[in-house]
Length: 340
Ligand code: HEM
Ligand SMILES: *[C@@H]1O[C@H](CO)[C@@H](O)[C@H](O)[C@H]1NC(C)=O
Ligand SMILES: *[C@@H]1O[C@H](CO)[C@@H](O)[C@H](O)[C@H]1NC(C)=O
Ligand SMILES: *[C@@H]1O[C@H](CO)[C@@H](O)[C@H](O)[C@H]1NC(C)=O
Ligand SMILES: *[C@@H]1O[C@H](CO)[C@@H](O)[C@H](O)[C@H]1NC(C)=O
Ligand SMILES: *[C@@H]1O[C@H](CO)[C@@H](O)[C@H](O)[C@H]1NC(C)=O
Ligand SMILES: *[C@@H]1O[C@H](CO)[C@@H](O)[C@H](O)[C@H]1NC(C)=O
Ligand SMILES: *[C@@H]1O[C@H](CO)[C@@H](O)[C@H](O)[C@H]1NC(C)=O
Image (cartoon, rainbow, N blue to C red; front, side):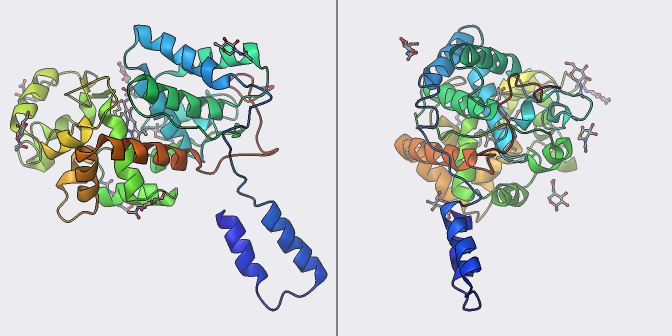
């Protein structure tokens, strides 16, 4: 869309007069380089793909209450690095430095085996047509709706990358230790605004986080020898049980202490109670004067408003620089470029 608008603007320049230039401009407007995804992309080639994905996610939830959270996070970490192109799924190989070994992902992202199970189920019904990038988008929606959250029509038609970008994963994925302004700019770079930031952070209504990613807030925050002042005291004491001072940084706590596995708007009332687990969560509410505060308040007071915005922002995130048309490929194994 942006490309179309740009093309239209350029085409109005009076210097463009030749028939050749006019033809190029018309072509640009008909075939914008940012091709659109759409909800019916597999209507003839794999009509049941959403059901197939959903059934595998539902199966996995029977034995792992956390898996929905882990799956939606994979889509997020995929989309923020070179767009939603399945790049996060590639393993190390001769030419690939896997994003799985990037700082934000190593010992942290999970659910790759479930993605492989989904891919196998999809290939059994419709061989060689559904991309791994689209599987991540579909699995994210299934995870949210199966956990009590909203449903939305997932836009489809992404293709899979031929490469990974480990360095990009190190720098583009927000860190929980970053300030709100840094995180806001990482969202802005991929075209997401602060409404998207607050809504999508609401995904921390389910799933877990490791002590090593927030325990600096419990004992000696910023060298003060005191806990983070924006951390609720009674919540801090319960977190200290899970994360003792010299304990394993790999132990995990629930991101939402009130309803750990349900997808609801309690994340936002937690923030109002100073019960955001990560520094990056609490900053949305506790940063004086930030425009995020009123958005947190509106989502805390209306689950419907949160669900509506969350669905829209998931679509916005899913639209980040997809490969479409004949770019990239449909991988037959999500872990490897075809033929490698
Ligand atoms: C705003 C910036 C964000 C930061 C700084 C951030 C950071 C984190 C961190 C540090 C963890 C814990 C990882 C671990 O313990 O290994 C986590 C977990 C999680 N994140 Fe985020 N995140 C952000 C945004 C998002 C977004 C946009 C989504 C999805 C829409 C998301 C979904 C999740 C989920 C569901 C989990 C739990 C995963 C599990 O239990 O396996 N996060 N995040
Ligand atoms: C789609 O899936 C449903 C349930 O999994 C099944 O009953 C139905 O026959 C499938 N339809 C097609 C066209 O495969
Ligand atoms: C990953 O976790 C294991 C323990 O679960 C630990 O031994 C290893 O050092 C960790 N690696 C990194 C890079 O954090
Ligand atoms: C990304 O970060 C990881 C861990 O912090 C590091 O081992 C790796 O070398 C980095 N990769 C690149 C390409 O910067
Ligand atoms: C925030 O971004 C600036 C500029 O890129 C960087 O120098 C700084 O280290 C970042 N802060 C944190 C806490 O990551
Ligand atoms: C963010 O973008 C959405 C459109 O997706 C828009 O409705 C919303 O008002 C924007 N938020 C801000 C704070 O500009
Ligand atoms: C944690 O380890 C530090 C030194 O590494 C020590 O000074 C401190 O007393 C220990 N704290 C606890 C609670 O064990
Ligand atoms: C701390 O959390 C409790 C709920 O567990 C809440 O009643 C209280 O108001 C919170 N305190 C602060 C300072 O936010």
